[in-house]
Image (cartoon, rainbow, N blue to C red; front, side, top):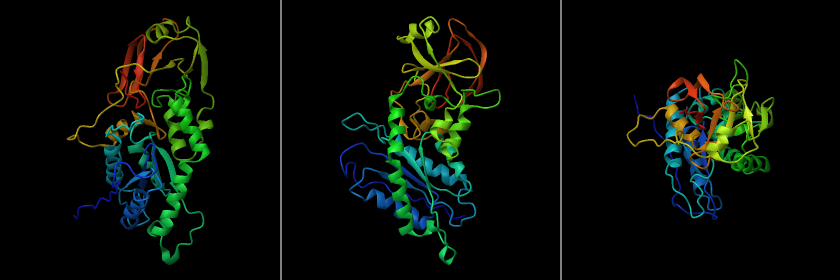
Length: 330
């Protein structure tokens, strides 16, 4: 079997284009003929700070995303760039943002098995493509470049900028920053289901938050937390189990993982690395960012079930659990 050709286009220099932070665009769903040119167009544009990586997906339209190894390879390329841990003079992590521009055809949801809810989703669509000679638009580089350019404009729109600023504010009560696999909406549903619906365009940010309880906690209601972390009278979210998810910037850094050079690269490993660092395309800072899940006052957990992405379901006893953005639980 012939070895699959990987298409990768990285910038020629570390600093080119206008000064400022460097965002990364991950391009998914294009065939070999257009994946490399599309990425190169961005990387050779001296008027943009965006950089791009791409991998060639299936040539035929039936099953563009059918081969999970292609998505995994794209994640590997993007993750290698993202985990360089280089920072510019202003302390901005590289990449400063991560977006996935994807051909919006059947099976694209597989991308989230690798990228999770760490990236900003940018669907690539052509509203009135006439299929000349029976060809999909993704095979036509001029058309691809126009559609990718529109996606980049969306990534810099007022709406997207408002989302970025909101996430960077890291409000203590922000639902979009909660650990989705451990925040229970009801007896059967978890918040991550809404996150995935947001990623796939079925929900907007406002609808992700519907019905989630936010309350202000006096010192008396959450004394153990305030004794550990300081402060008082902060607003936090509670899930249907009445567990308080109190945001903290101090912890064991259990959600911030490096990928060893000789590691066996898997989708869960890459997803965990991305989700520990980014949320909907925006960096999570500082590295100790987490939620302390706990009961009110001095109530203790007694084998309360949490879902750790490394260990699976685990019982937690004691005064609190550290739940990191990637849903690593310690």
